[in-house]
Image (tube, rainbow, N blue to C red):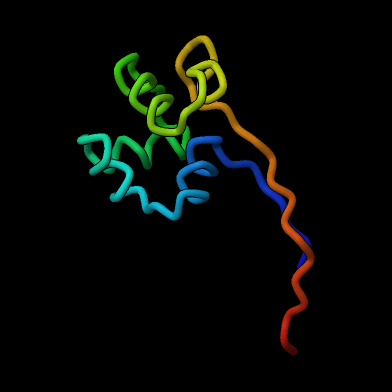
Length: 85
């Protein structure tokens, strides 16, 4: 199976740290649905959350969000994985 897909940089960084959405939300003291909505691009971020996320991940806000506060996406190319028959 060849794969690839877009995900937000927030989701990528969260997964790189081995955190669930719930764990990240607890670290930031926010509702876990806010993280899910950001990662699924259902809502844009508010200024305080943009700052919290950039500090937590150690990156500039402009790396995570566009000028309107929407999370930026990255493309992840997944390796080809042989499937059992």
